[in-house]
Length: 302
Image 1 (tube, rainbow, N blue to C red):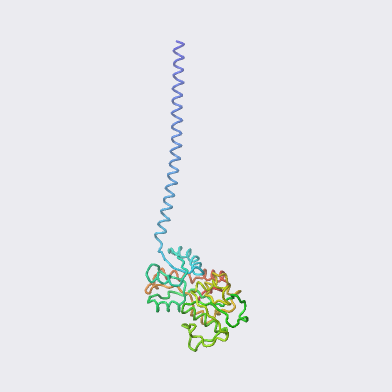
Image 2 (image 1 turned 60 degrees about the horizontal axis):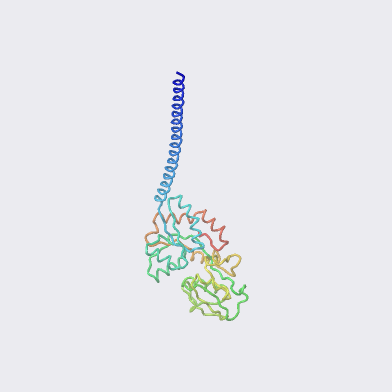
């Protein structure tokens, strides 16, 4: 009887152990299931968020714009966030020259460009047969005469060289500025198409060095003076207020003539996306950015 009793006790203990072991396995399974469920929920949330972001991006209207690096692309970067809130995705591509930005808009590869003033735009259309129009004036960049090997216009001497842009409208603008400062005199009637052949008086026998606009700032050490577009002056580290020996005044006729514009292919100027772009670029927020950033080298156009 004693042996039988002990056997029953041992069997009971073994059964209890088995039951306890089963109970432990169930608890672990529940914990693992809960963890897996939590991870699945997190993954689902991430997927949903990514889906929402994709949907938001897909819902936006894309505006592809070509621009000069400084100040145009910088200004556009400030407008990008504002436009995103209005449902537009602004894609900005920088170009170093003054030809390709017009060609890609004419070809329909880009919706707009931002780098040029109206006389250049009109001259480009005439020479290249393109169909680009002004969709809105944004800012004005005073043209300036900057020091090269000489730091004052009073030091000008016979045979000095002055580097200027060689494209039609910008060369004329440079020559007119040199005329305004008594360095040379152009023929009567020479205006926005003036070239070196229109120089009537050159008392100091100045040599005019004609270069592609982007190259002018790179020959500062080789010429007595250089005449620079506002954007290239900025890229070269010049300040209109501090460094220019002479420059076009903000209230001058030049400000109205040479306003930098958003250019589009004819027929797209009333496109809702283009109108939104121009509206943002003319907003107080962008005007304040321009005024506080460029030290007079870029002036908002009213």
